[in-house]
Image (cartoon, rainbow, N blue to C red; front, top):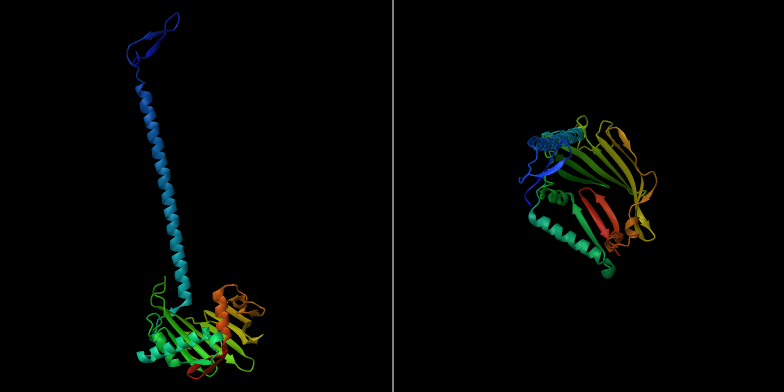
Length: 294
């Protein structure tokens, strides 16, 4: 009885229920139609997902391609073609000399950290040979950086290959940084040049002026002195230009080390205390000497 169904039989008089004794199956056409609708619905969803996935993939590809092309163009603007004349000389220094210089530098800075307890005077002298020897001993800096020391002036030549960057294969980033110390007013005049294809012939020469066709130029004047018995480094003025566009720099004086002196961080306070022990820095041809005292 449980497995039997009932069907409705129409008669001329009244509708009556007749027990058939057999289960009633659903219409075949309705079942097939329902399955077809489900298949169509699934197919539509798959097509939508495939279209959406393809759109997102294409959009991602276009973004990556556009980023690559933009980066490639930027690298080419900031670099120049490789030339043997732009390769910097390496300075070979005997390992025992470099080791002695490193130990001397470590002892100097260790004394700086203990200055308030020991109260001794110390100095560190770094020669041009020492600095370039350290650069040559580095796989990263060898042949790409060179320091030159003159009376009251230091220059840093830079010539880095850019093969790892998009559009940089066979090209070099060539720049020159310099700092000129003026004793009469205790100011350091810093400058930087990034050379272009048109001005790279002036690279590594002692030309004091900038060229309007340089890729980028920058200059800043910094006053170094003591205020309230502590080292004061004050930005006075400066300007910068990249690809003909002037980039704004602060137009008012700025105390560079104030964030160290006013910080509650112990490391910052230690750094400020160490810097405050520096008494004098002298630049002579071929060497730089840093003197520190209590």
